[in-house]
Length: 116
Length: 481
Image 1: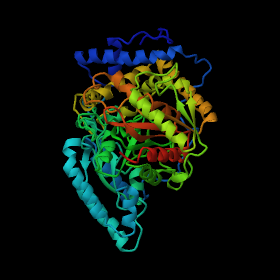
Image 2 (image 1 turned 60 degrees about the horizontal axis):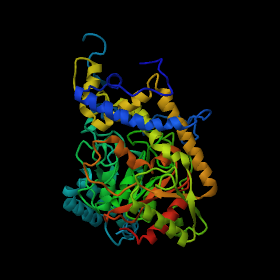
Image 3 (image 1 turned 180 degrees about the vertical axis):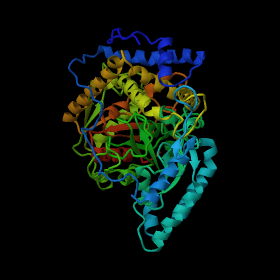
Image 4 (image 1 turned 90 degrees about the horizontal axis):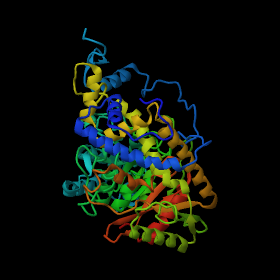
């Protein structure tokens, strides 16, 4: 979407932008919702325009407050015990929470083209 | 009765956990219709648990530091086999297959879980009006909001439904409702309390913390749940600090700075602070000075940009975290011809408007062509805020500000204007962006008779001195409201 627009000062978000973003985010919006959300998102992004006033050249980005990296846990089974019965019970519990299951797997409608 | 004394009486055999739990269940029965603090009250399992605690005492054992104390949990913390909704239709009826680390620690500490509290959907909101299950009412004035997003936890403690509650704070969601309901609320240092089993909103900002009617009770609960957890890779790998043991040490010689920019004073400060809130803040500064602290004005200039940066960063992280709610593995599914349509139909039916807004905002801010302008820039502003705090903490041990710009507002007043609602968080957001601890302490009331909270801010791992100052403020304010 608009890859050649000026990145430092983006234009106001449009109804088409919101429709496109909603599709990416897997949300269906009615015309009324599209209208309302466009105005509200524009308000929030307008507020963020106050950042334009800041000189951020040479400032490093912060993605996380803690200076931790490559945190690893011991290489052991994640379930409480490696016991096969416990593991089976845990899997059963996980599968029981799913909307649809078949042969110990999550069942979904066709992903590509028509159903087999 | 305080949590500290309840636990002491149970441990000494003076009072049964069952009688304590029965009293609180009766309070819930009497008041919950008016307040709506809960998504689930766990009466049967709470009584059963209380009996187990009493059995430990009867056998000569010690059930732990929270023996028999009723605790309620914000409904975004996983409880094995017990519904966990996040205030959303998309998780309605879902039963997690595991307990959050905080739940396991409460069990070890002897606490009794009595319910799951109402919240803004996926913790997105400042009023608890964004819950799919209806709003929570402020116990101090039921026509007003309790704040949010942990409004159910704050209201439960304020209403006497439980002496202790856990909430989560991503941009102020513990501190702001604590201020509006007149209770103590703490956002610990990022990583101080494990996030394992906390349903993620914005992972680099989310932190679990306590609500209580007193500073000592908040310390008791925080001590019970804090500390390293190998299940959370962002957990601080160190022993949690002693808090209860330092509460009475006072503030003699501590240097305290009142942040001009987020208290509505100074030339570059933000506007919108009500004068009574500013008066209480000034009085809080005087109370600390009277107790021997050195109190001066402080400047943390980039805090005024916190709100803008936060409302890009938090939605960006949320848009990614909430991609997991797709109708495949748990919660709601709305069927359709193919999987993509099923995903969209499920998310459209399952999410409320505020969650949709933030997902779209985040998706937009992360998309090609806009990433640098919004997300990249906001991450740099985050650096400026971290650096400004570091400079301020060269001159000060603690900082002070209001917790929220106003007292509790009427239900319905701001819910249709997201930007107006977001302005509630101007004072609390900077600490999340920096990963620092901060807490709200009730300090008198406003002209409308509603509670005002003062926020004490500290550098990372500065909880001990933060709690010392909070204890002094609590004593000066005359204890809990």
